[in-house]
Length: 263
Image (cartoon, rainbow, N blue to C red; front, side, top):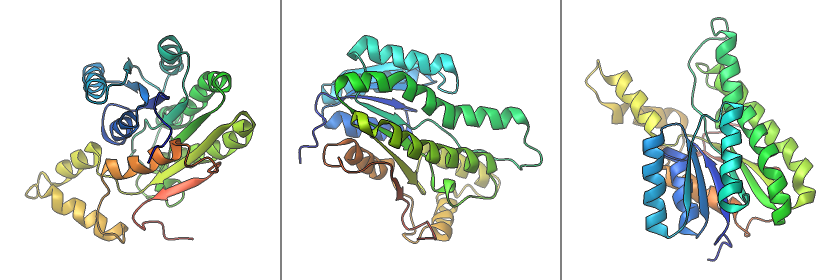
């Protein structure tokens, strides 16, 4: 199926590993050019080069911290300089937290708000004008099932991802007149390197059965009783970026193996 993505330009934050990298490969396989942003410069450059060579597209690495205004500005500048703007924006950068509300300092709340929410706000302000000039575009926000079904041990993550979901909805109503479609994805259990790292740490003193730990998490939370691969989530992202999803506007899509307990 031709998804109409050949020659499009996609900006992906958190694009050097996990979900962001899988999305980058999925879009590149459809012929999309990429602007990949992440903090670890060496890994980012290596992945951008590998994807460009494998799929015959351009992949521009931007080493930056999207939680800062300077970081998002660098992404906008790179997209303009390399491609004259972007057709697709995937706000994917983010990470879990671990704290209590009573003990977490203001600085931690602010950091996560900058990372999960203000990065999306700043990139929208920076890239939407170019999308208008190009005749339209797509913006997708990678939030989390925790935005609607919170986990007790990461209240800051829950709150900021819920804010991102609401930002996605309100942005969608503002820019749909410009032929820019905005949607949100709430993933459930996705087997990212962060999950594997956490599982290894938690089982290091009890025999190191990190696979068994992850299986117990899946058994507890997901009726499908397994984690998804990043590629499974990326398939949904690529579809929502495509011209086969042109009536999808202002929605939140759960890709969670049945984890959400409400209707």
